Image (cartoon, rainbow, N blue to C red; front, side):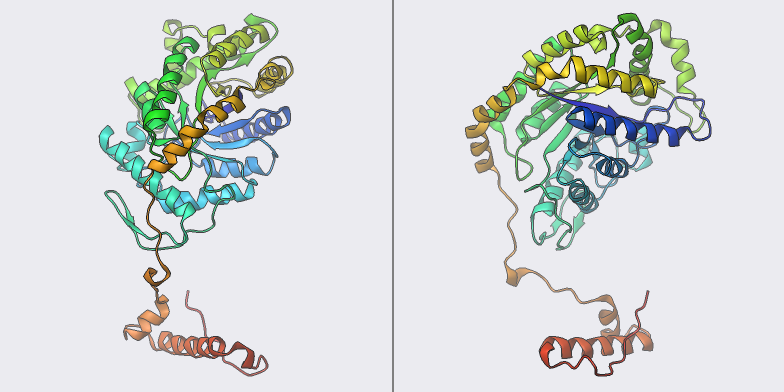
Length: 441
């Protein structure tokens, strides 16, 4: 079983000068430490306008910074919002590929939709869950096509359209980084399996209940998978809390409120809250409600090394491929997070790294993956003669007679220079005096 750490960049009020700066710098230090300790994944969410709960609105920037301070840890979008009004698919493809290049091929491409009024309304995405799912599917499918096809033929769909373009750069991982989708229910788990992508599960499922989720996923993957991308990623990851100390009471003192605030802030923005932007104090409301909130102990990843080991074994026995730790929540302290990660790497992680379950699962799934890829109907590539030619704007304006005299003169000069160079570049005299056309901004 693999292990990951997860970031919302939570920042409860009151906010002091420099608090956000410190939050991000400490998170970078934690990811760097996790990389040195041998933890497998660092996941970073994308959320917008969710004050206190998540100040992570530009995950590609944070993950790029992580890439330059680490060597081995996988860098996961957990998740990138795919409805085109959040992020145009071409921009996503460009950012994912660039991150993959600067990280030497360590990107995990997690995707999702979001379901908070603050985000959906802020970008005018719409609240219909069926329509949101269609937006997600269209965005993910075309984004992976853009990362693979040379050129991308263009697309006119339900939610976005664009003409033929070659989207560059291309990712280092071929055909593209592993795909995931955020899952909060068994139905989404099933959808992930049908699409052949990893299920990044944020439902805080009990390890024993996880067995049903995992069984559903792999049964459907084997029988019904039609890949949405150009490769499959059969994996199930599940989140849990995380606070570790030799003394159970101290572990709870350090981490229980962080996990409870994580859940409370999530519920505030997604389920029951009333929010006045820039004014609502979620932490103050949490403190008032604390006495009524459920406890979070060893069955939530908070306790001693022995307790955490038992907790993780249940996930492993259920077939979970990766457990993701929510260690940065509420007012959890940076030094406590680092101490817990070091203790985990020393006393808990080695046992799980020694097992060969992942290799055995890959071998078992190989024939089913082959069948799934055979079911995919890929977008048809363009023949060379079908690829359109696009004339530069300056020339187009000049030829249509709508440009200024300067634009027309520049277009003629550039055309003459191109004609000389392209017709016989070996005969072109580099010493010859050629007037350099001026570039219009």
